[in-house]
Image (tube, rainbow, N blue to C red; front, side):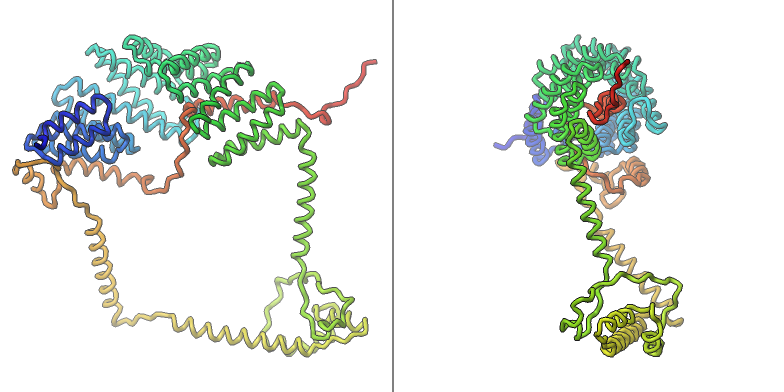
Length: 608
């Protein structure tokens, strides 16, 4: 006996609650295939399928089912269902990077929630809007590679708007005494103030987040709070406090058996001890990070670990070890396409080779290479002379076969073939310093060998005739390719051309139309289907809403540009903004860590 739609849907919901979303999708899609005439059940199935696909990171399918849910809710005038579906669509669009469209959907969620006096829904809509603006600002900030507190106005305006929504959300959930929601709001407020450079406020909110996480025994949230507190203290210059928070982050990550987060904590600790100039401790943590990165096959993480280990060993004057890690950093950066890392490693290699006295041999080899290249270039500047049959028979064994190029007179007018022929005889006899042929003739005569120029004259004549024939042939071909329009048939040609273009474009537009199944799984309820088809071509009743989305999409020209290749994932490396800070601080201290080569040190003078 086949299971009913309700039974399949309930099993799918149970699997979703246990976290087995992949198996849940099988049951929920089977429920859609069986179909139902219960509109509330079908709406719940759409919502669950959208959430399950979102969890599985199949965002396009998640978006499809959430849109089905929205279409059904608007068709039966279910305002609460419409609000929830709009919020789900907004969250999915945010993950897809469609921030402006996501804002429209979340604002629709907020508008309906206020209309229905749904305080919980209003709080969720405010929270979602804060997330979208936070993600939009953070995404724009990464493109400029600025550090927290140094973003342009376009970024800070998004982050400030996110704070407005988060603070309003926090006020409502405090009135509702929803502690879990308060913790989420505090964590996001701390992250946003951190990006704006308000590190004291960030610490305040992260401490409250940590307190609520401990209250609920939420270990992942506790780990995030410790890590965020460490980052904020680093930017305040309180490295000792930052190290203590990172150690607590490491302890919680080990309790959770999250190896990637353990590696991130080790990496942060290593960099913090480097800033404190405790290089032995820094090396200990960077080695741990390197081992985990190798275990997880995180090549980007390996490169960062080698870069940090090279700096720490160089600061301790362990130049051989520093050279080893700098070489590994260079090789890995080249492998993963990290141009900045490759250049940095190359500079470190040059410095270390200089200190170790390994650069003299490389300089000698480079000088020899330049000499060889210059010799090749001098040979390329030589021009070979044509030889007469007498020379080919060995009569000019002592004559050079090459001559230097003549300087070109740019102001000299070009002469025709007839002028060349008329002047050839006089030029070869009278101009002693002129053409190469006369110079060659004089040299040959001085050695007792007479140069026969008749063969050269015949070759020039054949060459000129050949080029004249090519010119006449090309001129005829060009005339054959010209197209002329008569005044009488100009309008007719235009009309035919425009008709063909219109027909072609109309055909292309028809090919691009998508045939979408309106509500899969819906049985009966002919009035719902009729309402969906009322505007023709199967248009859904939320045309006005999605027209706003289309206008917003049309304004986003960046969607049409080619994107850069996605960077390789680095699960053992923290966020780029913290790494950038470490890199900038360490780069300012490179000069302090360098050691002069023995031959570059000033000579010591004895005191008398």
